[in-house]
Length: 527
Image 1 (spheres, rainbow, N blue to C red):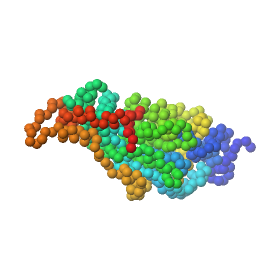
Image 2 (image 1 turned 30 degrees about the vertical axis):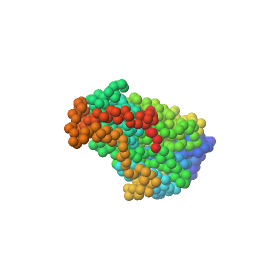
Image 3 (image 1 turned 60 degrees about the horizontal axis):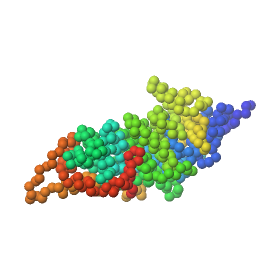
Image 4 (image 1 turned 30 degrees about the horizontal axis):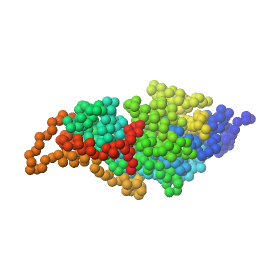
């Protein structure tokens, strides 16, 4: 007999040989420190439960990619990883685009399929739910409302949401710069509309002359874009109370990491919005968190679902900011996993920073599919597998994996049958979701929107001060250029005041100096 190592056969009928070429692969995953168990090694279609495929816990902040065609098991992989991170005291952020990740809060349901998978992968499966906080953008859907102020969101991300070109983005940047320096807080979209209208008025134009000015045509585009944005029901996402991303870093009372699930089914038809909001959350964490260097375990692992939407039609400056954020946030203890269909959805500069890879099956039905398959194969290290054949033949819940070992070197490529999640593999009833939201300690802080004094109110007050008394004859209205806005009454209200210039020069310049903006132009004054 050969000297091949042996492992029990998955059906328990006897030993199954671990062939010679598979031994170095299995040895590459024999870590001694804390790790997440992903599944068991596959070789020639046989699953070897004694050859476990794992990822070291300290390497989770070296980022990763979970990719694969629709229906290949990416969502269950996210659930599996999130469960184990939570169990080891690491908070997790998940974007639930389809609504089927909410089940992580409830124990799973056993059955023949789960029992078979557990036996094949050497898993001691036990039903278990995990501590979850449900979030929802703007409170649309089931979850604690997640809002951002316009000031905090910044001009770069807002330009991406509004679909502005480079020139318009630069003009929007001037508007934000002006508001920052004058201490005019842009809390919601009406604040931004008011400031844009003022800066294109006769009174406001001199304010921007020194830094390039703002053309009436560009202002008109920005105002029309804001109007269309609001007409689609987007205004609720901007305002106060603003979500504090530090709430994503919490632990449950039992020491497990809290899993924050952003419920997106209600806004899944607005992909540019939610993908950009995910980037705001990540950029805000980057802006606020201190450097910690290499850590025993991440402070947070952030799963960025539908990642291709973030990169689609992105400007070079936007891509550079993403690349920089991903590169630098690792030293703040945050791991980022991009979730998409193929590695080609992620720019090469970002892909090169993703040390942990879980690649589910790919399809090769069309020439474009075949091209994507060949490109995916080239992103993996050399391996004894025929990866083109393997990637098109993987079953649901199987993947090709390579991660960073404990010393930071890439592990051998391993075909893997993944373990089954221990929580519920499906959605939780909406009524149960709503009950969990109302019982959350965050509900009282974020549930009710607040509209405090900001730029719009200050402009309105200035206009009111400029109005003559009812007994006096009305002063002639200051001559101004027409602004092609969708809300003439607001423009009229804003630019009709000759007093606003002095107001804008006197209010809160100290506040403006306190604003510092990150790579993405996001800002936070502190809460």
